[in-house]
Image (cartoon, rainbow, N blue to C red; front, side, top):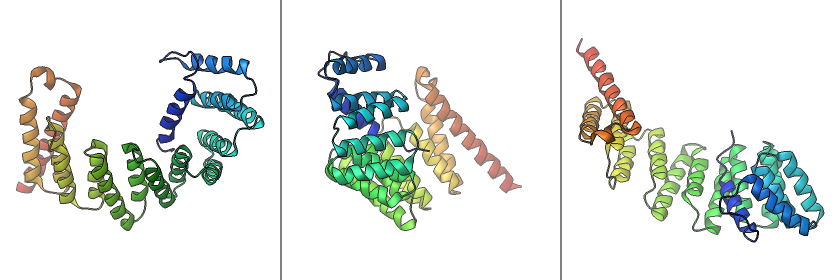
Length: 287
């Protein structure tokens, strides 16, 4: 399975800027965007960059064959080699040809070592190929080149590190702490840290991360249920039962409209099921 396409966000931002000179609306459809590029090409049919834009649109719309054809035209008209390699790599990645994608994207990086989009796409492809250390190194380079990178880049780096052995897991946790220190409290990072601590068998460390993440929360029911489930898995039944009960009591204090929301109903169901499981375990022990 391909990893989440972080580079797609960069591509969309680039495309929006590239089309800004055309009279497109802020919420144009794929067909409208393609029509704008086609209109520009009718005036400048030998513009390699416009053919590149068209190839990107075709790829984003799922027409990979059309994207290949447009890219070939762009290359024939003199698209810069680094850009051509990037686009060939993105096309190959979209087609699932990961080895070819990695080769093209590595060449793009060699030709343009400061191109963040090529670096991110290469990192993603390395991760998909199972080359986790190389992927983590590539993500580290992205963060160096783009100090304002979003949490998805930091999270991808953590996951690439965590794909290795126990030593790499410790490194992943350090990278996660660095990300949280730089970006502040972000739920996705907190949950990744909790999962990694549990994978390492460190229940108390996972609970400590959960407590830090939940401290600023106005609504604590979800955190209480998660804490209870962690305690239950660790065999700490009395503590788990107490947390399940606290979650149910907190949910009961909510206004009826909030108690009836799908999220609240799901939490209540998880808490009640937890209480029932622990009751059965306790009853079995008493026999």
